[in-house]
Image 1: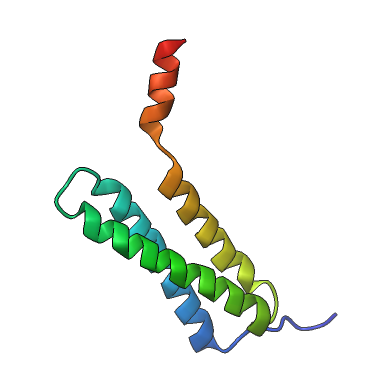
Image 2: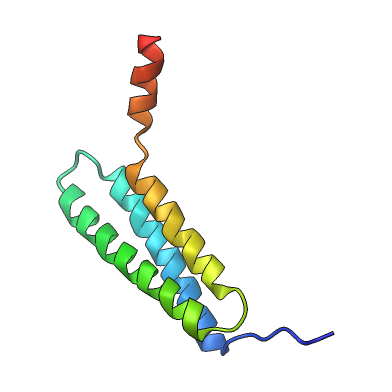
Length: 96
């Protein structure tokens, strides 16, 4: 049985912090809809989405193991949260 090949703890911590910050910015962008801070949070969201997509590419090519799954899943959650509109589902149900 081979030992698990882990990256340096600092690298792992940086990737975990990036994922946490990206999901926090995503939540703030959704919560701030209709407020004065909406535009600022949307720009932060787009910037953090770019950082997460870049970190996924870096993880694929540079980190051992399946670390790209963490950053890739975070990137996917951000995309789904950015395009999902719960109000549209309610409108469709009211038409039926």
